[in-house]
Length: 429
Image (tube, rainbow, N blue to C red; front, side, top):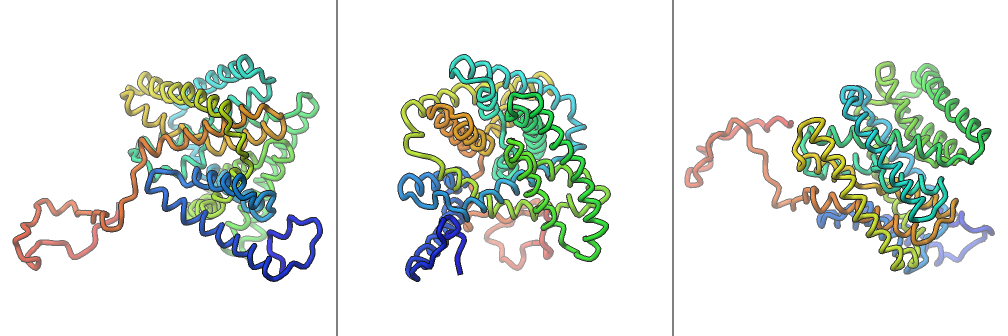
């Protein structure tokens, strides 16, 4: 039986048994490397996503392995779709409405920043308008799915966590809208046609959800997850055909499911969000590995490294400073607290990888610009880990939670049987 790797061949032919086993072992090794090594390196504050990108680059540059592999390409598509589906499902509209004033101010600042960066790309990089807008998005847009997935490992408070989530989601909503418009051909008829298709998709999705809930779900219980994922893949393919990549369609499906939370709670329940997050955690490493496969040694030329360092040196302090100052004057927070939130939404990994690929393949930007964006996003993704991330303790270092009722510390010299310890486990908070 042919395994997925054989799909890349134009001429399907019988291969010797030894070759088949060898390629199958390569896939087994790939699974082991993608799911074990990145997790092991997290102890050293290296995000698993960055490790997967590096592994893809090593496989491509050093061994020419898995290039144009249909199986890896399919798995990477499922990864990016599920990641943005998860981001859409995690949108809390009541939280956005509650903080509407602050978020509106934040978005105005971001739009001004995007405009300024676009103008600088036009002036200094000598790029046309469309690529300049994309460079601005790549340098300023946080990767919501990646940030939400890594929140648990950052040493932030519950309040900071809520603000990080709201700011990242609000910024990405605006960025996806700008991305959709920027990727359209510079013809009014084409823009109107793409907009009509997108609006039709948005209007069509609720109808599909209602039909599924009334016709299919009563006779196929527990099929919500498969339905949601397939609809996300379909919508992602539609928006890719419109030139807006997979992430727009998947994000719209997640938001649509969130809108039906009251009428069909199963589509946006905590259990469903957890299932999508688990699914994404399995397939997302393939997306980052696939992105690394597209890198070449000359993408890290001295010019690319210099440009990436310049992007990092200018954009990261500016982005963090704007968040900190805004929160200082709007909420009265300290600059240190605002800077923690600014650092937490600094990673642009997924968004920059997607846009860098579009800039290279569709607009043919100079290789130094492509490489500079890759260096910039890898560096800013590492930054929160080294400043905010809590290193997972070893098993022997894990502290046992102490119940609040145990106010006094027992004397070590006292026999264990006489210690006043609770018999029931402490309630999880």
